[in-house]
Image (tube, rainbow, N blue to C red; front, side):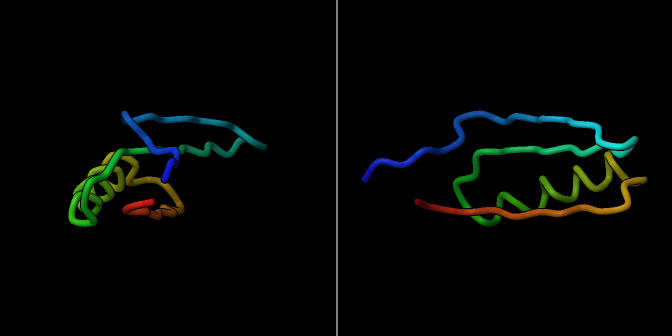
Length: 59
C-alpha cells in the first residue's frame, strides 16, 4: 500500500485578521512520541488562546 507521510518536521504560519495561526508537523513512529512534543509547544507558546492538536500513527 502506498501512502504519503511526513519525513521531517515542518512549521507553517499564517496571519488572518491580526490573529496568528501556527501549524507544526512532526514525523512520529509511536503514540508515546506525541505528548512531549505537545508539552514543549504549549510551553513555547504559553500565551496562545488555543492549542488544537491531533496525531495519526500508521497508514
